[in-house]
Image (cartoon, rainbow, N blue to C red; front, side):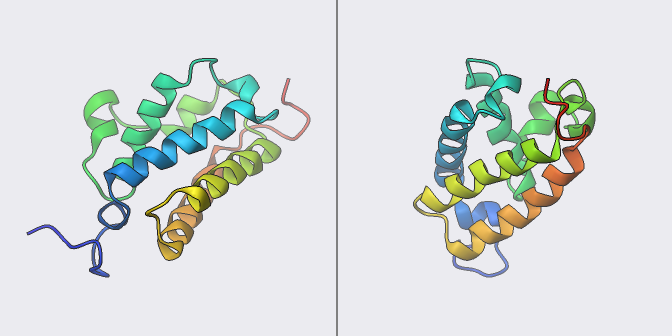
Length: 135
């Protein structure tokens, strides 16, 4: 029997729900596209990037393992090595995510904080260059 979104034992995915998660990704990439630190390392068309991010976040938050099913193991650090991910860019990425979390209806404050904390660890792990190496 699936968990209720109000059940404290429910996964983050169950509490947020697929619709709010999709809206979060949409709002996040609208911000990324306008961010002067991030836009240069992303493609002009973010459609595929957003699709992959939604698949990743679905599994990351406890939902179906869509990313694994569609693309294989995420290998996040390896997939990001071609791009200079500096501490500044990690902070910009997190700022975009934090703003998107806060402006997405249906994501409770506690759930937003939980997801932000988990993604903060991921962003720190992705750093592969020093500030000033943005190119």
